[in-house]
Image (tube, rainbow, N blue to C red; front, side, top):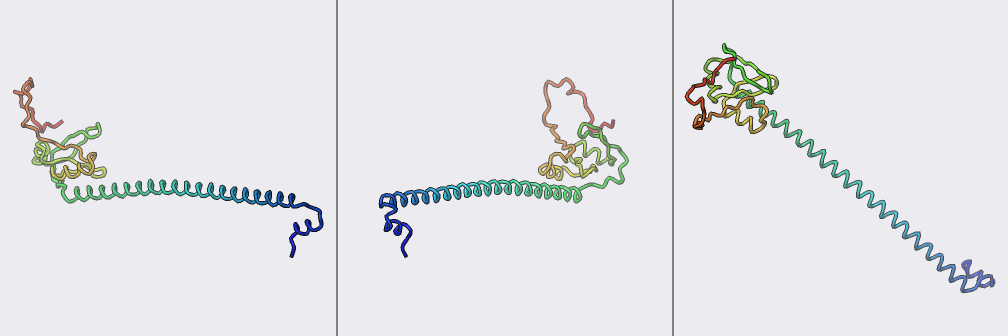
Length: 179
């Protein structure tokens, strides 16, 4: 089969020069179309790559948030377990012990022995949900290591440090004052 250009050449309707010019134009047109398609696919590939990178970043952020939430829950469970295992029974308490928490004066009922131990720093008050509990100092330190806000008063007994310029050094101030 003869192509259309061969038939036109034989008929004398077109010259060789015109045929070559048409071939060149066809080749250039095909080349520019191919390049534009490649450019479109490159842009699409870049857009897909960018979208995937953004999705991966969002996924990392969501995973970090979920991990932080899981860690907070685990710490809360550890603190709850520490408090439940080590809290002291205040049911037989007959003395109201006043303390401050979050700028407000709070009160719990304790025994005489607990009151003196809280004042000396051997026992501490911690917050368990909405309830205040009395726990040993070591337990309070473990809780403070996990969440400092739950320890209401962590008495540190610094009786070794006495200021020489203290004008009230000669006066004894009891630690177990009731308000």
